[in-house]
Image (cartoon, rainbow over the protein chains, first blue to last red):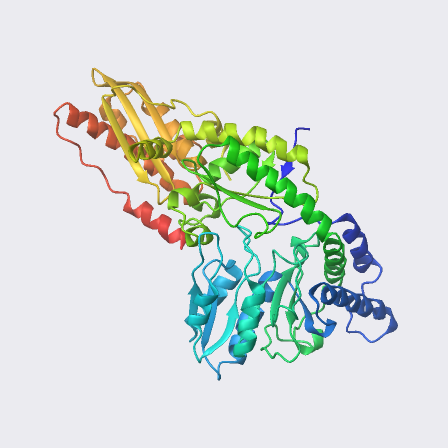
Length: 397
Length: 143
C-alpha cells in the first residue's frame, strides 16, 4: 500500500486503542441505565464518577464542576446561551472575538438576533486579541466574555490568564472554548480564573460525540437540555456512559504524556515549517511563532494556488490536510480566521493547515517536504494569479 | 464529490499554458471568489487552431477550463461562442451544484477571449450574456 500521512489531527484524532478497550464493556456487559437504582447500574454510576474526576484533575477543578455534553459544540452553546439568559436582567452585552469557532461565533450571532449586543474583538496579525481592546469593550452591561484558548485554524494561544484575571476583577463571567487546547497544553481553571470551559473528547484521542463543560462552583447558568434529572439536574438525557468513560480515559492518557508529546510533535512541526519556508518560494506561515501556538499546528499560505486544488493533489499523494479556502468549505468566503488576521483573499484561498499527532513520524514530515513543493510549483505554473503576483513584485521593486 | 471525468481533467489538464502573440486573450473571475481563468486563442481562417489556458481555482475550475478548451479546439469562432456552460458541465458528467459557477467561468473566459480577438480584428464585439441567475443561485446556496 502506498504511504498515507494523516495531518488533520485538529479535525479529529483516532480513538486510542486503550480508550476503546476502556469503553467496550459499557456497550455490552454493563449497559444499565445509570439512573436506575439497582446494583446492576452501580458500576456505570461509578464509571461516570471516575471519568468526571479525571477531567477535573486535568483542569484543576473539582468533579462537581464538570458536566458531560454531546461535544464541544453543545458545551459552547450551553455556556453562551446559558450564561446570557441567566444574566439578562443584569445586562445584555457579550464580548467575543472574530476568530472563534463557528460553535461560538454562530451562537453569539444567535444571541445578537435575540436582544443581546455582541462585540467581536479584532485580533493582531498573529491572531491574538489585545487586552486593551477587551478592557475598552467592557460596558456596565457586559455579562459574558468568551475567548477561545487556542485557535483551531492557526493554533494561536490567547492570553487566557490575563483575560481571566481581568474578568474576575470586573465580576464578568469568562468562558473559554478549549476544544483544541485541552490535554495538549497546560490548563488550570483556578489559576486562570476561568468560569466556563468547553472541551471535546475526539480532539485528544477520545471518541466523537462526547464533550464536557466546566462550570465553576457558584456560577449559575440556565439549562440547555431540558428533561430528566441527569448531571445533577443541569443537563438532561441518559448519560453516554461508554463515551464518558472514553473521554475520561482519553484525557488521562493524553494529558499524562503532554510534555513528551508536545516536545516531540512540536519538534516535528518546526521541522515541517522550516522545510516548507525553505523549499517553497513566497510561502507564508500563518499564526504565531512556535511556543505561542499549539505545538501540533502549522498553517501556510501559498499565493497563486487555491486550497481545494492543493488538498486534492495532496490526497493523491496520500497526504491529508485541510484548508481555509472557500471552495472546500462550501462557502463563498474564505476562512473568517484568516481574514481576521489580515490575509488577502488570495492568501486565504491558498491556505493549507497541517496538524500533527501521535502517529506522525519524522519520515512522514520528510515525505511531505519531498512532495508538497512539487505540487505547489505545478499548480502555480498554471495559475494566472501567480503570474500576476510575480509581475506585481517585480514592478514593485 | 466529483465525477471521474472532472478528476481526470483536474489531474491531467489539457491545453495548459500560454500562446505567444495570441490572436485573442480573455479572462474571467476574480481572486475574491477564488477563481480566475485566462484563455489564449490562435485563430486561422476563423477557426480556433490552438487554445491554451491558465486557471487559478478549485478542481472544478481547472477541469472546466480543460474541458472547455477541448470542446472549442478546431471549431469556428462562432461555434466556440455558442458553447454554453451547461455543455461544459455535461461533458464533465456534471458538477456539484455549488460548483456550477466554475463552468460559467469557462464560458465567460472564452467569450472574453473571442471578443478580444474580434476587437483586434476591428470587428464589432458580440454581446456577452449575463449569468446572474447562476451567480445568484451560487450566492444563495452559500448563504
